[in-house]
Length: 238
Length: 207
Image (cartoon, rainbow over all chains, first blue to last red; front, side):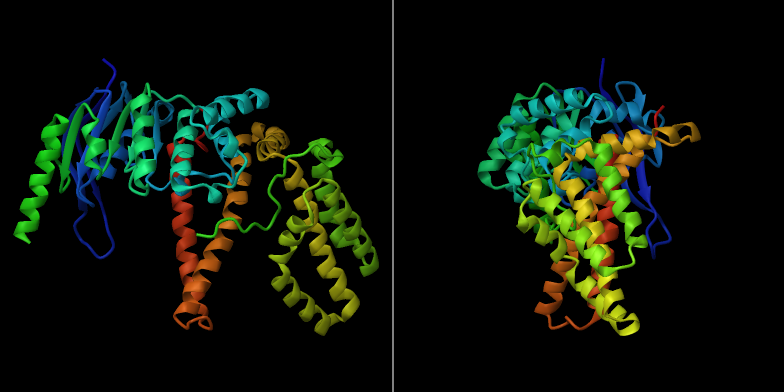
């Protein structure tokens, strides 16, 4: 079965002024094959590191991660063709001055013919209602439009899996709802990290990450309740 | 972040004769202007060439405002160069040097204002194709140009932001308060861009 496998993965990084490496994730073993998976947890808990492992942006210090059988270190090119990654801040992701140019840049590797590339880019933009804004500077777009554009640029190459790192953090309520609906309609397997428990409740499976470990793995309602209880305990402890 | 300030004019859709001109002709124009800036010895010739090129820019329909914006951003640097050269070598030489730099900027603006970025990148890929036999990846050449086009306005925007925050704290005369944050922001931006490109599988070597 196609899925993402974490096999006893630990991620540790050496930091200036510290003799011991800092452990970001420890002994993670998971199989992820559900259509919608949400990763929740506090800031600095290891959520982003967990997601970045899937796309090969972070390399395990020990253990291995495979996506549909491809190792994220040895077959990174294949993995990145299968896994689209959307960053929290779309401005760090959008490389070109306008939406049209950015989507076309995504397509450069797979579509060599310029006319075909342009048509595909327009189709990707039209899918998210962004065609009228295609030639506008990315700096003139609203936060929601930018996030949708980042999604369009990633989905233009038709990845099988979409990974989103806190996609709703910078969005207002209206745009958050728009993003939620957009994600619900996607055919891709979607794995996202979020602080938005409503978004997490749309998932089929929720992982709660705390201090580099997966401390809960189960249904969305139980996961959200578990995370709330964890936060309440930590705040009470001071 | 004020990322929209741009040294060269962004692409302006249109169907003017300049838009329709083949890409190689525009590349040649830029190359000739770059070469001519070393060869022209008379400031009057520089001024005439610049006037002609401004005419070509305006013929494209990109507008006077875009032309002035492209020039305005480099005006302080050109003013400093012009004054120094005037002091060292006299008025005519200073005028020639400044006009020749402007000639290059306007020529590059004609290219970027009338050519969609992807067409520009396709052109770079074609130009770089002969280097494939030496192991070079033409797409990487194109990607480098794309990143350059994106980075210049970002760094200009970062400088404007840092200058404003330095002013707000009364540190506008402290070069360290201006340079260091821009440097740090630029390095962080470079890492971020690298990560964004890697996540999209761009810039990886062909298998």
